Length: 103
Picture 1 (cartoon, rainbow, N blue to C red):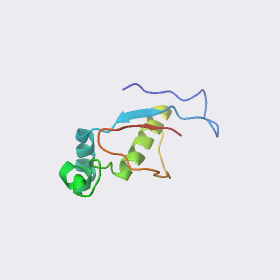
Picture 2: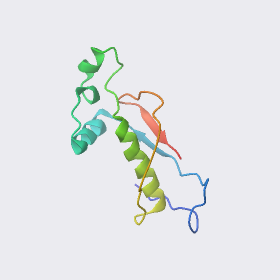
Picture 3: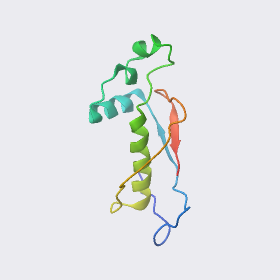
Picture 4: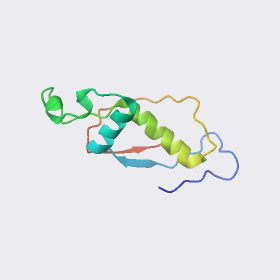
C-alpha cells in the first residue's frame, strides 16, 4: 500500500482527501468481525442473510469508519491522529461489493 502525501503544509478546510477504494470481500468482512468481536451472523453467513431476504451478508457499518480513518491516516501520515469522526450510512452494502471512501 502506498502512502498518499498531503499537500505542502497543513491541509486547508475544504481540501479533498484522496479516495480510498476497497473490495469488501467475505474474507475481509470475517477478518474485521474477528478484530472487533462482532460475530453477528448477518455479517458472514449467506444462508442467514438469504433467510431474511437479503442479497448476502451485509457490511458492518463500523467498518466504514475504519475505512475512512485509513484514508485519512494514509493521506496525512503516521503522526496524524483521528480524534473524532462522524459519517452517515445511506445504503446497505453487501459482501463482494466495492466501496470508495471520500471526504
